[in-house]
Length: 393
Image 1 (spheres, rainbow, N blue to C red):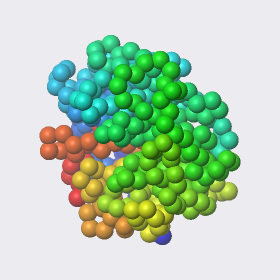
Image 2 (image 1 turned 180 degrees about the vertical axis):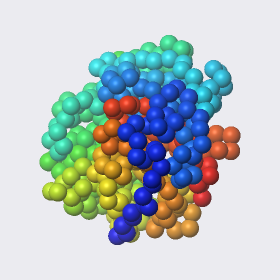
Image 3 (image 1 turned 30 degrees about the vertical axis):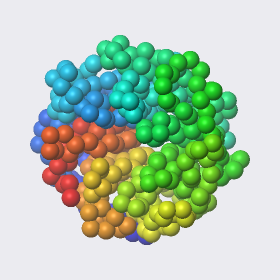
Image 4 (image 1 turned 90 degrees about the horizontal axis):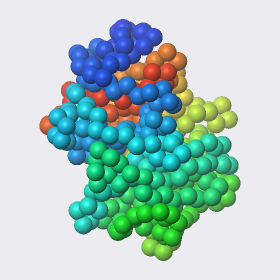
């Protein structure tokens, strides 16, 4: 286990009460690196404080902002159809799916070349370990300027969280908190109630020990991170979902998000479990069919939750978002030399009035430059677009 304590940043950005002092707060906020971290804020898209922004999905120059009860918002950030760029996002359209509470999204590219659907997750009320609520919605964007909610999936007594789509095999894997992991057939035309498209379902930790946060399919294994029972390795759906290994391996903290790269999994932690804060990223060595093996941990005092963990497409940079505390913000690590023991690169402070920090972060490459799109928490919710090219390993 390694402890990190990034050097104190004494710039106006860290000491200010609002992001406005860092050049943010407006629709476009191009400016210099004000923190001395090598990270440069190039734009800030304000989101109504109707909770705010929860997640974002980036693909082929389009950004899908999951803006809770404001709905799913679509921006051109480099697609070209509206002249948008990372420095100048251009709004295209918005839809509020049934029930609102838009939490996450995935723009689905089908094997036949169709790019018609966006899968949208609704996150309703719940209690850790016992209950959750919220459906999966399917939004038809055949006309990108006029999205339509055309289908949905409901699981009684449980609610959706993050999901992953196996596009080649046309299967959506959804983390369903206390409902476990659900696999849905998303081939062909989607409409109405998708209950009949359920392929398989599993509670990897068993009843009372399952509260799945996220899933990711890599190299023939489906990895699931569970708030209660840790990291699991599952066999993908082929009529059933089965446990290959892992589980009951993070007893000290609640689990949160995960990312898999370079033969390793990186999983976050959340909140407070028996007084132990979620200030750790766990690093796991993976095998084809065996249980994940814990290799290292990054523990960073000064916040209580790692909400999002992601790696760049080239597997050289790890980013995680931190919330609630004086060291909230974004943390950057290099995976280039030793992905089992990441090397600290930079800390970018975003603490706001109540030190809420950053909820989610997504890495995207455009025009030879690397950006991070990040969801700033209330009380001033926004999508921040950061140029991180200068610190990319």
